[in-house]
Structure formats: structure tokens, C-alpha cells
Image 1 (spheres, rainbow, N blue to C red):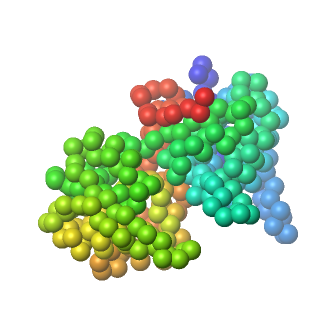
Image 2 (image 1 turned 135 degrees about the vertical axis):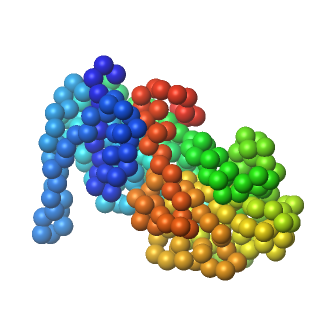
Length: 317
């Protein structure tokens, strides 16, 4: 980029936007947005910077419906005001666990939100969406063909966190079959042994551990998952590994969603000894502390946006 791209964000992602601007070392120029809320709750936004003939990076995860609509409205304004290219950086793509209909009549929210994001008018040099550590690798294909969708992997941060928590001789574990392939890949880079938990469904909302495939006696186990919400999956897995003799159990996840008292549940006796993740979700910095370690994805995002380094990303096409 000859001139710095303009960097915009929604309020919940402003802390990460500041870190991204620093990591990009002058290659991104922070832009301004005027905002206010009317008495009836309607939200007002106005671009307070010139984006005409500029490339624009919009940093905005879809962590909630209000965040999604704020970002969508702002993206429209960016293109209508003459931006050359729009890159929507979506560190946390909400709705991603609803990527398919398991029962008749279920809404596939991941697809409907991808279509909404695809409905932003096309900038002259095109629109891009950058997504991070998706729950299902096929989600970029839900975006319209006019949108170039990319899936960025936060593997370097996961490896760093696993080493810091587990130390030498750690066992890298998957909490269920869905993460097995990704755990095998991480374990190969770490030179670590692997462990797996198999679950069976007791009801529509309850599961239980059916089998543990692991040699963890006296060893530290680090469970990897893409996200943590209530934490029930991690707690079940941690208890299963402790029953097999693990001396400590930690978890590394990318998206720290953790609503309500989820952190307290994870800290209870017999659950986790520590948790590490990234700042892809606004909640991460709120729960950061002695028990929760947070690493920023800003350097990975900056490397991809400025084409420096070699971040591992897969494009849909």
C-alpha cells in the first residue's frame, strides 16, 4: 500500500484496533467515527474522516447482534463514501456454531450472517473478509462470490500458550472429536503426545465422557479448543484427564467468550489450573487475570494486512 489504509472499528473492538495500529507500524491510519444513541435506542453513526480513494480496514467482530449491525451499517457508509477497497477484519465470527441445520426448521445463522455481510456494496477494488480460527473450516464458502473470504489461523499463539502452560513433556488434548485433527497438527509442531476424549449424548442438551484415549499419568495436559463459552466441555474433559492421573490440566482456546460466571466454573476444584486465549472477543480483556492469560492477535492481523511475514491463512478462492 502506497498510502496507509484507514483503520476503523466499532466501540467494542477499539482496544484491539489500537493494538493493531501499533503492530502495523504506520501502515494503518486510525480513522474517526462520530456516534451517539437517540432516546429510543436508535444509533447514529457518521464517518468523520475522508476515505475517498483510500483502502479501508474495518475491524469488527460479530460478537452480538448490535455489533453486527453497527459494523454492517459502517461498512455501507465506507463504500458509499468512495473507498477503493474494503477489508472487513472479523476476529470473532459469531453464530458460527450454527453452521448447519441438525433438525428441521433450524435457522443456519452462520449462513444468514455471511449473506448479510456479503450484502455490503462492492468497492471498486473489491471487498474482503478476514476470519480467525473458525469452528467449521467451510464457513468462508457461505460468503457471496463477490467477496474474497479468508480464514486466518492463530496457530503461533496457540503454540506459544501451550508451551508456557504445559512446559516440557506436556500432553496436548482434544476435548472432543471435532478438534482432533487440529490438535494432531499442533502436537506435531510441539513434538508433544496427544490425548483424546470421546463423548456420547445423553439428551438434546447433555453429553457425557464415554472414553479417554490418553497416557497422562503424572503429566501436564493442555486441552485445545477453538472457543469457550459456558466451559462445560472443558470441565468434563479436565475431570476425565485428572481421573487418569494428570498432575495438572490447562486449556488453550482462541475465542474467550465466557459469559456470566463461566470463569468461576472453570476455576472450581477439579476443573482447570489455568486458561489461555486471545483477544478476538471483547470479553477477553474483561476476564484477563492470574487465571486467564490473553495474547493479542494484533501482530498476526497486521502481518496479513501488510503482507509481511507468513501468517497461515486459507482463502476461499
